[in-house]
Image (tube, rainbow, N blue to C red; front, top):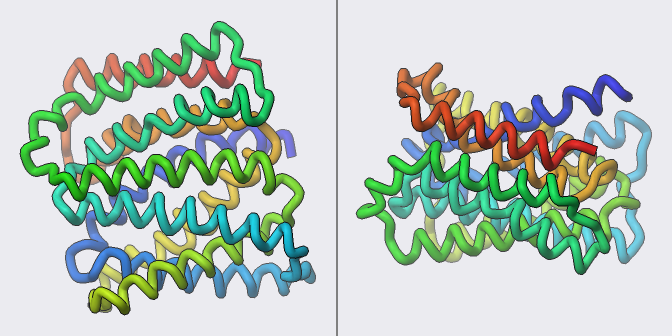
Length: 287
């Protein structure tokens, strides 16, 4: 268990960051929200089968079920749906990353009052340093902000609110919910909500080819099941502020993955920003 606690944050950051890469492939031949709905439905089925295979019950109390549904709508329907649709509406992925990376600041400030968590001086410094680092890494993306639409901006603000709410609800209400069963219902309700939206809008295109199939497989197994289970597990064992601060590392990690996969080079400003972000997260994570 100690080994998992040591490596879980790093693994989470790497695979969560890959979501932006998967999104780039998924958008080419499919309607974004419908792709997400199918992805989450498949993930829910797989997780339900895993739960039964491990001889665990899918039954939840009324309170646990309601909490799981609320967290699922906030985290998967509003956050993921908002980010992916915003990018589809023209938002540069870098700007989307910056806006949603404000989540640790909101979580930390709200958690002080709502959850009774205390922020030490080094954590405050770490949060501010991490935020500055994220902006430094992705500052060049703002030069392309002419493509940003009002709809895309509103979607990103909604996504930020969704991820913030989900983190706080998980910490406040979700710590006693069985992890596998609770996450199954989270995926299922989000799939239903996004699927209903797709049907109402008539955007149900999903072109199955090798590229989209590989993107779907990675999105389901890695960024849905493994990453989400890691996130919820870490929230049950650590403070909301400490876990949320890991999201500061997502934009820099995305930049690194883009360098490896697409040959996008990092300039000195980006390297300094990555160092600042890493130091900021280290300060928040320090016990």
